Image 1 (cartoon, helix red, strand yellow):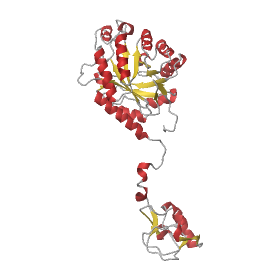
Image 2: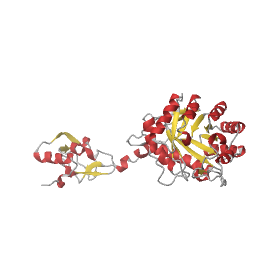
Image 3: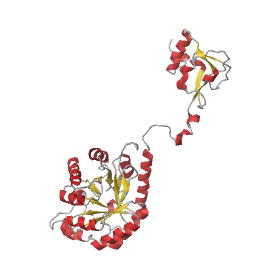
Length: 376
């Protein structure tokens, strides 16, 4: 997509998402381990890395899983209720994290995992809601978040295109006007070859909203590719160096790794350019030295009538371009020219000699062949 094309865009807390470098969301997620202090430290790390936003997951375990719910493939736990309970942050902790993030200039986001969580987050003036992949088919949650009028970012792991379109429709009917999608593969980590990054362009084309990548890969390899495919947002879990026990460590980046990824994403965006094929300023300085001019193939006397074989294309491009060979053939020189000297229209008479021999040479010149190369 060209930069001159109208990219789908939205605004989150006054910041444009779409048509520029990716909007980077540092996912604190569950890596705080239930500690508000650890969450605050991750906010500081996200700011230092250059992220645009931080995101929490607002969980009440009893509102998320039934006692008999089996654990997903990447979690080992006897009771998921007990497992998720250790990651609960109360309203006061949310308020502290949000205040720290705003003080560091970060957009504040969270994923509500219950209807009541939407109200609590709205009361804390969250800047945007994220709908988790697992809740893509929960219309009531999407509608409740949409009714706040806050931007919605909807993750699409495990979803079909039909399900995604339905979720976007529910959000729009619910009152959301600022909607983005995140392509996501809900594997932890995503196996190599399963990234399916072309889905980013598919989602953007079908849903006409900004689309990004929620990256569950073992590293940030996919980000520059995603940007090249049109990604406007990038979400990555953040973890401190040495936090080997963080629950999402396998799909997380350290602050230094996230900072490097952010720079790679911005560089990828800049490398895409405008999409127009033209001589760029960076290469314009090489045009004269790299291109050719029509020059005398040998010493030619004044009055000589030029044939294609009298001219040769040589660097630099200080005279007429070789594509204009036919405009010289059949013209008489006003003055003598030396071997290798550029031959220009100022050195020839305007009238072209008209006879069969020079007409044949002119025809050969029009296709770029010297007279000596013609087939008899």
